Structures are given as structure tokens and as C-alpha cells.
Amino acid sequence: MKRIVKAYDVVIAGGGLAGLCCGIAAAREGASVALVHDRPMLGGNASSEIRMHICGADHHGSRPNARETGILEEILLEHKHRNPQTSWMIFDSILWEKAAFQEGLDLYLNTHVAKVAAEKLEQDADGYDRQIQSITALQLTTEKEFEFHADLFVDATGDAFVGAEAGADVVIGRESRDQLGEADALDEADEFTMGNSLMFKARDTGKEVPFIKPFWADSYTEEDMRHRPITEISSGYWWIELGGGVQRVIEDGEAIRDDLLKAVWGVWNYIKNSRTDEGTLRFPEAATYELEWVGFLPGKRESRRILGDYILREEDCLDLHPDPETGEMIGTRFADTVAYGGWPVDVHTIEGFRKLGKEPNRTKLMEDVYAIPFRCYYSRNVKNLMMAGRDISASHLAFASSRVMATCAIGGQAVGTAAAMAVQHQISPRALGQTMIHELQQKLILRDCYLPSIPFEADEAKRPAKITASSYVPGHEPEKVIDPWSRTIGSRHHDWQTATPAAEEAPWLELEWDKPQLITKIQILFDSDLSKQLTPSLSEYQLAKEYPGTPPTLVKDFQVTLFSGETELNTVNISENYQRHCEIELPKPIQADRLRLTIHQTHGTTQPRVFAVRLIK
Ligand SMILES: Cc1cc2nc3c(=O)[nH]c(=O)nc-3n(C[C@H](O)[C@H](O)[C@H](O)COP(=O)(O)OP(=O)(O)OC[C@H]3O[C@@H](n4cnc5c(N)ncnc54)[C@H](O)[C@@H]3O)c2cc1C
Image 1 (tube, rainbow, N blue to C red):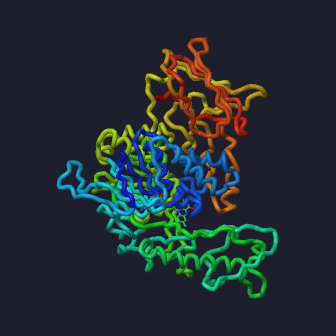
Image 2 (image 1 turned 90 degrees about the vertical axis):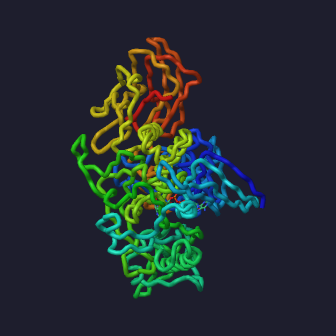
Image 3 (image 1 turned 135 degrees about the horizontal axis):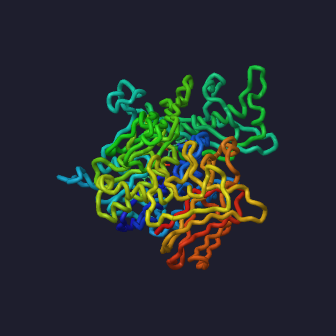
């Protein structure tokens, strides 16, 4: 094997959605980044190898205006534009493209992080006792062994492999009530976790297709399936879940995979061939269906978690507190909020599919989204280690909510941004959290990340003196494009929305300044309808809830014109836009005292909305 030594600012292990968004964010922030991923395609559980739909705080579109934005939104809108037919292969290619063509990021696919070299620190002013020196990764496709050095390492492996090998404080399993004071925790802690699952997809061939059960497939009866209804025959089922009890998800992963295959094929046999007491087929509609795809790589739900300076608890996810400003009851907030969640606390039965007499899960819904603090995203004892994804610092119960992929992705973006800043300022993640959290939060908001209860602080010197528009809907006044929020929050609107314009009339919005502004870049945030989910899915039921392509609320063709007095200085025309977050960079800075945004066409709506128009650097 050829040994190659590489040095980067940031090295990320694991290319699930958390690692991918982390890598893109760090590279866009100017860091040199290696994204080291053991599979041929990115996306982890959302890749075509596993095919889980990406869920988040909107809870399958049931919580209005809650969808995650930032890099994940950019990816999913690209996907909606290019892949309305939801081919998983196209989704894979979009994830690959985002990493492979990202300046500053080197992508290492089929590269398995196998060893971590760490040293003990005697004394450290920031309170750390260990530090990673390098990680070694094997790329067997090219017979290479890479030794990666970096200022900061990010563990986005899901399994916290890097953290565990580096000697980070890690946990696995379920806490006891007295450990973190969680009301729903157990009397006694244990090491049990949720299990792994394999998914399948079936298609209607339009003619009868037999299914011959292989000798190794399991058999199931109606009684076995009492708590696991067959709701869709064309895809399934997260509850075909094994491991986490006697069989350990990591150590016994290969045996669990074999058992899952027996279970999936047994369930498919139940769907295709089982009969009622009267002798008729139980699912006659399945007669024309055949298996199109069955996963061979189990999706992993839960394993180790790395402890940070804060451990997110179930109460942080569920409790409500009065908003100091409005008195409204809102979810938990932190001074160092960098991400948020909103998926229910969704706890699965240990050894799921072996416990057929029990419900496969229990869920607790929260009324509002909850914030996740920066302290959950870096190791409390390894100086140069951060984490992104399902291995962040959370209890088993809080993890039951924070593990979903959209929550992992926005956390990943926060970690990548923070990692680049920490490297640039040569400080540890802990020191960054203590001294630069405000800068980090404002950077994230400028990259269109939503941080609950953390407002955008605009540069007062750039504040327009006057904002006017061709028309507006009451409650959606033009001035809202410069308020500190860029989504609807509860009943409060933060957008300018035009009244339906007369035919041939193009709605416009104008920002005017008392003094000329030196303009280099203009940011515009349109409306991508944050109330609808936007994910690839195996489930026809879930896909039917989505727009088939680009959300009709989005603006397609628009124009930005800069003026000095009545003199037109520059006009930029953008056509075929399908993103919420648009940035227009001028070829050279222009002094202007008036900016006009004109909307020429949308993807469907006659009353487009704009959440922000900002001058940025
Ligand atoms: C069956 C199932 C159903 C689920 N349902 C949903 C759902 O509907 N919606 C939802 O949002 N979430 C769902 N989840 C949870 C969610 O998929 C995970 O919590 C999420 O994928 C975690 O994201 P991640 O980026 O941390 O990890 P992953 O998606 O697991 O990505 C981590 C990646 O790191 C790679 N890796 C691991 N070790 C190494 C190494 N040593 N070197 C290099 N690379 C490595 C892995 O191959 C993996 O691809 C489900 C999980 C399972 C298992």
C-alpha cells in the first residue's frame, strides 16, 4: 500500500448529510477541507444505499414554517429542480456534485478511517486533556493509505468512531433518571440502543407476478403483525428493526444485517402470499407488485455519542418557556444556539422486530421547535475534535429527536462554519464558543440558517431610509425585508408580499438610502414554502404531500437595478432561479443610493413573497 501524508485545516470523517454540510460550510468559509467517507456515495442514510427520507423540525410538513434552510435547503431545491421524478440515483449525483465541485474541499470516497493517533495533554488552559495528532484512512480501491493531519477533526461517522478511538468521553445506551434528571429516563442506566433497519421498494408491473419465498426468509402471521400495519405495499418499513439489545449494533452489525434480510424477505412474503382464514390473499392489491430494490446496507439509528460541554436532555426538546419579549410560550432557547430540532422524541422499542407483541416505538410531540447549543457540538475533553450528526452530545432521549437528518445537516453546517473560524483564529472550539459565539451566529444567519430567538443584526450604517413597493398585502409590508427574521414565526410575518398585480405589471420593491452605499454583493431570500417537506422518499404517501418540482411560491425571473439619483448604474437579470437564497455579486463595487428589485416571473404564485434584501460583503 502506498502511504500518503496530507494536511488540511479541517478533516471530516463521515459523509452523511451532517458531514457533507459540514464540509461544504467549512470550505465556503475559507478552510482547506478533507471529507473522508467510506462509501462510494454521499448522504449516509439518505443515499440510495439506504434510502431514508430526510426529516426535520417540520415533522413531515405538519409544523408550519419550520423546514430547515441553509446548505440542506440549497441541496433539496436543486434536487426538486433536477429530479421531480425522485430518482435516488440523481439525488446521489447531486450530493456528489456538491462536494466534488466545492472549491477548497477534497473528497475522499471509498476511504475508511481506520486508526486515530491521539496524545494525552498534561495541562491545557482551555481544560482539555487530549488532542488528535492524525487519522489514518484506507482507500482499498486505489491501494492507498492516507495519514491526515489537521487543526480540527470532525467526527461525522454516526458511530463516533473517531471520538472513541481518540479517547473522547463517549456514551452508549440509555441514561438513568438521576444522571441528567430526565423524567422519562430509566431507573437504571443500560447500554441498549435502538436498532438497524433495511428498507425495500416494490413496483406495480401491471400483471400478476409470483413471489417464491427463499428458504432462509422468516415467516410472519397476522398476530405477529398486530402492531405493525402494512400501510403501503410499495415501500417499507422502518420498523423492520433489529439489534441494540443482546445483539449490539456495532459489534454484531454483520449478523444483524443477515437477520434483517431474513426479516425483510419474510415481510414481503407476508404481503405477497399470506392468506386470510377464508383462504383469500390478505393483500390482493400486491398481486401485481414485484420487489424492485432491497437494501443490503443497514441504516444505523443509534450507537455512541460524544460528550460535549452540554448534554441535550429530553426536557430541552419538550419544555415550553415564556418568551421574554412577547410572553408567548416557546421551546427551549440557549445563548449559544447554533441549530434547532423539532422531530418528536421518537423512542423505538429495543430489539424492535423481535418484540412483536410491543408497539415498535413511542413518540412525544413538542409544541414548538427547540434550540441546540454550540456546546453540544465539540468534545469536552479532546481539544481538536468536533462532532456533527447523530453522535452529538445528547442523552438517549434527546437523541431520539435530534437524530433526524435535517437536524443533523444544519448542525453540520454550524460545525463546519465554526471549525473554519476556529482554525482561522487559532482557538479551540470551546474558546470559540466563549468568545466568538455572536460572530458565529450572525455568520450562520447570513448563510440562511434559522436560529430560534437569535435575530439578524443588520449594519445600521447600511439601513435604508425608505422602502417602497408596487403594492403589498396588509401585514406583509415592504419594510419587512430588512427586519431581523427571514421566515414566518408563529403568527408573525417577516416578508413583503405583493398584491396580485394587474396583467403585464411586474411587482417591484425599492430600497433607498440617504447616502450612497458601496455595493458589492446583494442577498435576496425568496419564499420556498417552508411548510412543505422537500425530500426524496420511498413512500408514495409522503411524496404525494410534496410539490412535484420547484415550489410554486419561488421567484423564477427577476431583475436588480442600482441607481444614483435618477441615473441607472447597473442592471442584473436573473432567469430560471429555483433557489430561496440568491446572492448577486457585482463584477466591481458600485456606489448607489437606490436598489430596485423587479419580479418578472414566478414558478406559479401570483403573489410572490420576499423575506430579505440585504447588502452583504
Ligand atoms: C432505518 C432508519 C430509519 C430512519 N428514518 C429516518 C427518517 O425517516 N428521517 C430522518 O431524517 N432520519 C431517519 N433516521 C435517522 C437518521 O437516518 C440518522 O440519525 C442520520 O442518518 C444520522 O446522520 P449522520 O450524518 O450523523 O450519519 P449517517 O447518515 O449514518 O452518515 C454517516 C456516514 O459516515 C460513514 N462512516 C462511518 N464510519 C466511517 C469511517 N470510519 N470512515 C469513513 N466514513 C465512515 C458511514 O458510511 C455513513 O454513511 C433513520 C435511521 C434509520 C436507521
